[in-house]
Amino acid sequence: MIHTSSGNTKAARDFPIPSAIENTVPNDYLDNKTPVLVIMGVSGCGKSTMNQHLSSKLGWDVAEADDFHPQANIDKMANGIPLNDEDRWPWLDKIHDWIENHMDHKTPGTVTCSALRRAYREKIWMPGVVFVYLSGDYDSIMERLSHRQGHFMKPQMLKSQFDTLEPPSKDEIHMTIDVGLHMTPEVEAEEVIDTLNLQCAVEAHSEQVIAERARQEARKSEQG
Image 1 (tube, rainbow, N blue to C red):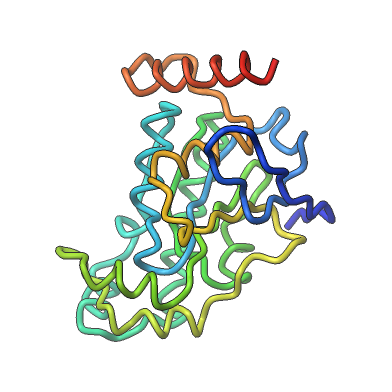
Image 2: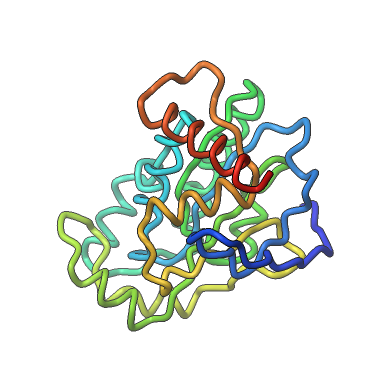
């Protein structure tokens, strides 16, 4: 895994978008690379919502980690049984293959993955991958999770995820967003886009992508 000693925290800005708590991504990291963002964190932190906002704004491919789970894993979680490493490695292999396929075809994308431990992140990391860590404390995320419906993750399993969680270190390529700031998911997505200086897909012409391009141009004008 390529690491960076750059632990620069993003400076405050004059417009109402929260700065990343931590940004270890070098300015030139994505040069000549295909970017794939891995939205990580415990269940209930907002990974899927962030994933959809980023994909819509950028016009990139999108995937959900839940779709890579075999039925046996889903059944375990639905019954309140935490997954172990034996359950997770084949799942991580599939996510790794999805990322690698996008790198091979030079197709940028975003994918959710809890990626709770460093070993899991090292399994799926390759040049061009950036981990976007949605950070929050147990109580605030538990409150959000308790209101979710139609998902197989049980609220009582959140403690096991926090017990497993190893937040990204400064030598891992990542940025951290504090969901406790209670900003809208759209603004959080814009923070990721602006921090990493991401570009919309050239061939994408959806309403969301056009609006994002306009927002980026307006921001450049304000800064100029």
